[in-house]
Image 1: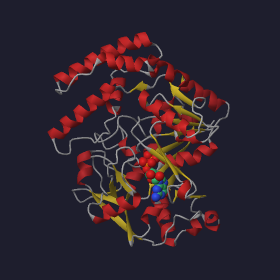
Image 2: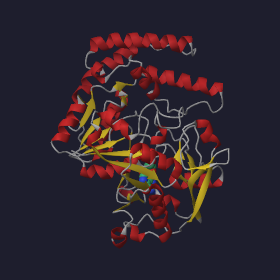
Image 3: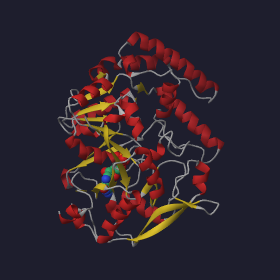
Image 4: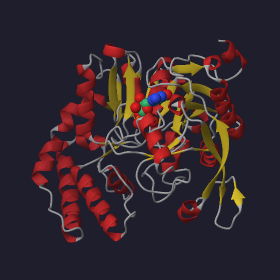
Amino acid sequence: MPVTVIIGSQWGDEGKGKLVDLMSEDADVVARYQGGANAGHTICWGDGAEAKEFVLHLIPSGIFHEGTTCVIGNGVVLDPAAVLDEIEKIEALGYDVEGRLKISHNAHLIMPYHKQVEAAQEAARSEDSEDGAIGTTGRGIGPAYTDKFARRGIRVVDLLDPESLRDKLTRAIEEKNALLEGVYDVEPLDVDEIVEEYVAFDEQIDPYVTDTSQYLTRALSSGQRVLAEGAQGSLLDVDFGTYPFVTSSHPTAGGCCTGLGVPPTAVERAVGVVKAYSTRVGNGPFVTELHGEMGERLREAGGEFGATTGRPRRCGWLDLVALGYTASVNGFTEVAVTKLDVLSGFDELKVCTRYRLPSGEEVRRFPSEVETLRRAEPVYETLPGWDADITGARAAGALPTEARDYLRFVEEELDLTVGLTSVGPRRDQVLTGGTGEAAMAA
Ligand code: GDP
């Protein structure tokens, strides 16, 4: 009864969507375990005039594989309007969603007041200090998790009981209005308008709602294969990331168990998705960040602009100190390297293997404290680059020696196998079979 969990090993945007899409072919169920509707997973099919692209925000990427059931787990915070809109768009492409999507009755809801509170809080943080803002996406995700843990959240199951929803919402909005007006000097929200809007979701959402933990337990005991996908990345984990510049949930492996209700003993594989270089959105320490021309080159070559917000991502060299840390926290059983093609054309490539702390000490451990991280300097190994376009390669043997050496360096430093390497955005642009002898001969 195996669960495979796919985890972002950096700060998100590693290309998890493509990997989940590929691995969904062998899965019976694909389940999302945390986050909200901010993380855009981009799925691409076809070529030239036939090329299609779809950005998924909430529904697992398995939805594009007929025969796969998709689950939005209890660990996700759900914006009902966003999920219904996504369902409509996927159905418009000709895919059946109603019979194949299950939403946890225990998932918490994102409400309009969560977005208002988030915007007001970010504005206040920016006023306090220039880089004080966390760089949230303004979709109310953080405040929805805050309410969940403060035990005043509203859950999906509440949508199915309009009378009690009316009471809970009225109380919640009155409380938030006091905060918005009193603390942030922001216009209050219209209680009746929101109550009417949310009461109307009852019938629309009803066909999808179920006890997904029980559903997954049954699926696993009947031998089905479950693929679990996280959003964002491990370094944004609220416990293990660069706090406070983090998300409000657990993208790391443990989040899979609490966010879906599957036991840790069911998790057989933990695949770390490693982008061949580093990117980060929003504020927070980023030791290998490249400012200037080199960073710009990576950003342009990798199309590093947010799928949802269009914000330019901060770019830098691969950081094996950070990756060693996330490999250990997550217990990666293997890694998948994405966007290797983006590194084509660089004379040389740098890879960070140690941090130099202000004391002069060089360490391989990832400091947990933001101030230490801010002051840490990267110590690089320099590897030769390659010129060839590798987007047409389908096996490790077709890569230039330097590209293979780059992958091997990652494997050796992390002591993990690179199981799959992605060399372009499309489904077919992938090398399977790792970097070993068999893959070379393929
Ligand atoms: P996710 O949130 O981790 O799924 O990452 P995103 O979807 O935000 O970012 C990944 C972006 O890179 C998407 O636009 C993908 O189409 C694209 N992508 C994924 N794998 C590759 C790859 O191997 N090469 C290139 N050039 N682009 C890729």
